[in-house]
Length: 353
Length: 195
Image (cartoon, rainbow over all chains, first blue to last red; front, side, top):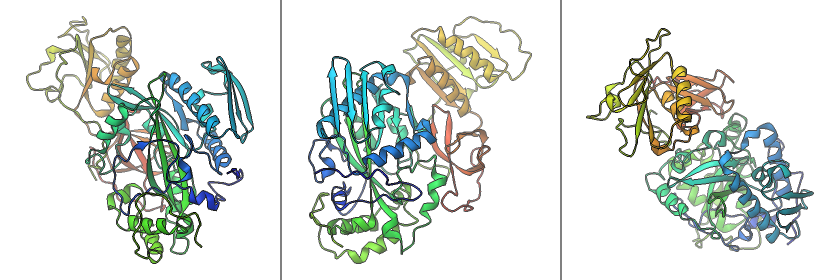
């Protein structure tokens, strides 16, 4: 299906972001069952999956142009949202190659990559970019290779260096994050940057996940879903700007809860990179309002049950206490108690309401 | 509130010389090696020791050789760190760096070691003395020293800040986040936790 981009929509101030019916149905709903607890929910990242968001290596949707513009704006305000430590240059080129090749393969109508030896030409039609450059020569691009390509992709990215049997977050493009700071976390080990997450350390989740990721193979990427909730369709919920978006959380009322509160899902992908042996971590963010989720019967039943029974420590870590009960109260009358099928697929191709 | 359950907070243990090391340099934020900084049975003579006198008139050291048992005295912490940068720049494989003192001193030493190419396995730290924290305001990047309370006011942007246990070794600082961002004025009382 041809994407109808909506370049003018906004993720701050006026919040004109809206989802088409097709965009709602392709949402990677994060709950495979009616209850939620931390787990090592990692699976192979192969094309095809329960919704259309899983059909490409790096998913592009109708918000592509608007999200790239929002990223450009965040970087103008705070250039340190993109930082890469100097020893990661090989990983930068690895990332550029992987993302360019994948976008050109998955979306030939929008992107193309032609190579003559080290002379590459990249065409990005939605953003109207035509760039010839020499692979491996930084001075032939307008900025560093990692920044260059991640300015043209949806979602955040980090670069993990592997050494001493650990992973270190030694670079990133982080403008659409769920309340973590690259400026503060850059250089941290795997357990350090996950330090603030409750319960999961005690369950051994991070020990097992690190072991698994240290063995990640080139050509066999993996993925997992993570989630939180955000008031208003705001991409930049950074700690840096918490004084700007924090007041949103106190603005939710029983009358506006369905439109204001959004389920925020991260489709996280992990790729071993060939030259650097680093890992590229993609954190692709999707926002869907409670009102839009309620248009899918299975999803509204399940979201109601998950939020109603959520462990209070997880609710507190994700910043939900001010409005969780309002979401539960809104969804309760919409949950008829019927059983739900396993997995995240919407089980319908028509929206209710 | 004193244990927020955050796992980026470093853990420390008393120092013992790494048997894999060829030479052991111990830097101390104070005039002598605190006994509680060393593991049981370990004596300062196992290390080349650098100390800080906090005096301008520092007598010449009896032994200036770079060997175990030698003690060098510095006027102040920046004086020691300046010499440490020079020393590490000309060191070779096998050096182990140890530090004893308040947390800020340890992680500033760690930063100098890391920039000189020492790995985490080549350094060890013992936290002795003050618990006061260096904090980093995540909103305006102001760094404040010697914070002893759970909540303090940012000297840079004026925000009332909550001091999290989330620690960055690179910045040698704890993260501080505005405590009343959601409802301005909703500030809990500050507790004296890190004195």
